[in-house]
Image (tube, rainbow, N blue to C red; front, side, top):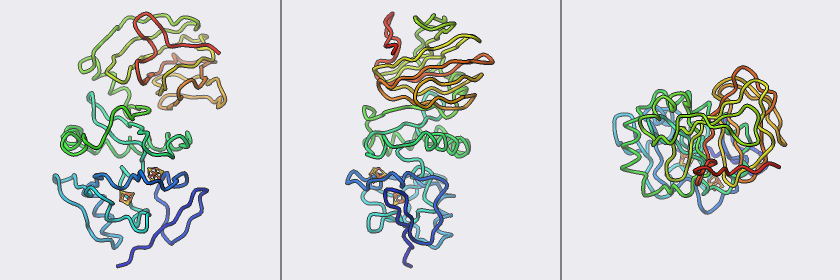
Length: 294
Ligand code: SF4
Ligand code: SF4
């Protein structure tokens, strides 16, 4: 059969008769030569059944009962540079340029830099990617996926191209991390220049550092920036963000800041705390802070 193409050009025009999937980066896609559709793409058995049910051939190969994949080279569903199964494309395609990883006992979304549309991702896309991942990954077997990754993806993936890391289940990460991540310090350290603010170093690995930051009611983290990018996942309480996108954030929200992008928190309530996951050498380097007030 001839699949119906959905054409979506930068700017958001749609053509064709398929509905858009729940989320897609296509509104920002510049259709680069890098092409996200040339690697080995994971497609779960139930996702493949959905693709078949919409009248498309099954091009997948079986890795395990639940895990199948579309092999290297241009994806068999790519037609004239466009995805012919747009409305039912796999989870990993929907969340790209986020990539799911199973590490340190929990699920993560890694944001990769290969995609030129990556800097254009709106905050809403990030929030929806995390929500979609929460709903999807709870049904996946973490260890099976880790094995699949080690066998199939390691050669494709470069850790030095990771821009941000977001734990999908942050509390699960905290519970597991004390065993699986090298602990640096579990004693809260006062943050210079902030009011009523303390950090606990949960751990670090080459390329990223994880801090738990707690702010007492009435405390404040003034507007500042880092020489590294940082993902902040709100664990408890709420606060108002400082900077150009000032808004109230609460448990489960994710705040993403690029290198030297000013941010801060004020009007904190209900025992505000968050995970701060920074790239590179991290925000706290020995007794030195990568912390510049603006
Ligand atoms: S299913 Fe569609 S989006 Fe996913 S790799 Fe294939 S062509 Fe690309
Ligand atoms: S890598 Fe990004 S910009 Fe390039 S084709 Fe894929 S989604 Fe579009």
